[in-house]
Image 1 (cartoon, one colour):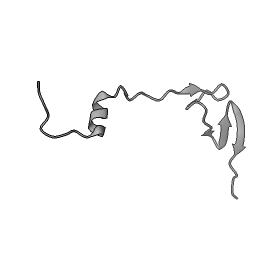
Image 2 (cartoon, helix red, strand yellow; image 1 turned 90 degrees about the vertical axis):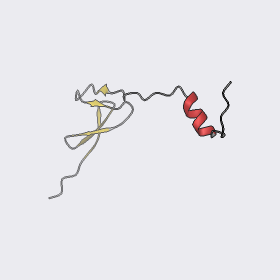
Image 3 (cartoon, one colour; image 1 turned 180 degrees about the horizontal axis):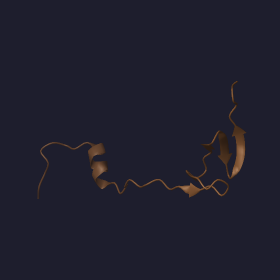
Length: 63
């Protein structure tokens, strides 16, 4: 049976034992604009801030 000459750190051990895998972010389509965005997040489109398909805020145009 093999024995390590030096002790491995707990971080190194836990990295080996993990089941975590990187995954692609999931996007949803806005029902109003048809834009892809992250779920449960507001997003800007053409100077308007949308959340749940509704306009929350508009950018002010400085003259």
